Amino acid sequence: MSEKTLTRMDLSEAVFREVGLSRNESAALVEGEQVKISSFGTFSVRDKAARVGRNPKTGEEVPIQPRRVLTFRPSHQMKERVAAGNKG
Image 1 (cartoon, one colour):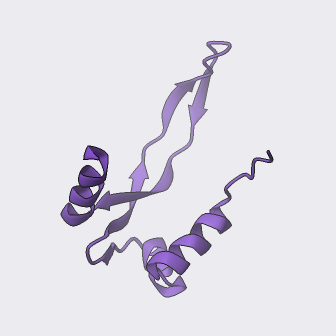
Image 2 (cartoon, one colour):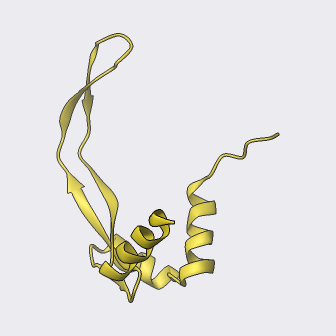
Image 3 (cartoon, helix red, strand yellow):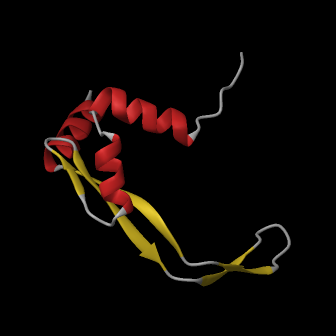
C-alpha cells in the first residue's frame, strides 16, 4: 500500500475541480478579501503575529515569524450536513 503525500497543488486542484474556486478568487484571497461560496463556507486570510514556539523534542525555544494563513469557516448548511452524516 503506497501513501501519497497531499500537496498544496493537489489541494488547490481538488478545490477548483469540486468547488470551482478560480484563480481569480484565489487572487482575491491574496489581496486580503474574503471568498464566500454559497452553501459551502467562507475562505479568508488572517495575519498571525510573531511568537516564540518550542521544539517538543528538545524543549528549545524557537522564534516563529509573523505570517498570513488561510482560514475556512463552513456555512451553517455545511455544518448541518456534516452533523447529519455523523448520526448514522
